[in-house]
Image (cartoon, rainbow, N blue to C red; front, side):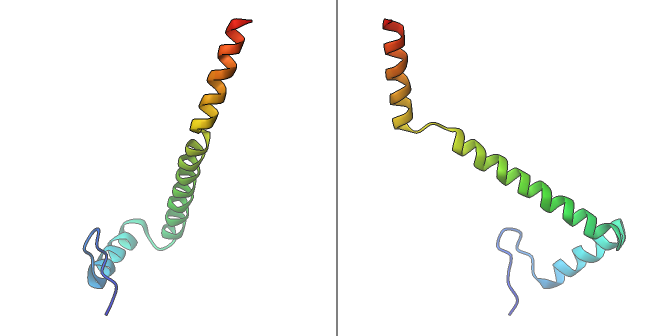
Amino acid sequence: MLHNFAILDLNAPELVIILLILILLFGGKKLPELSKSVGESLRELKKGLNSEDEKKPTKKENEKLSKTTKTDKKS
């Protein structure tokens, strides 16, 4: 049995029809370029999301920052 895509509820016949429509719209030569650009875009999006998570300071870092700013203000 073929894999059922739960999000879109697509089976093999529907995927074949979509692929044929894409080939008709973009042509056989443009399809690899299109898939490559979509893949690169997704990679960049994932990098951007991961880098934002890394930039968020942790609870300990926040405490250290607040302590240093308190001591700086007293000086």
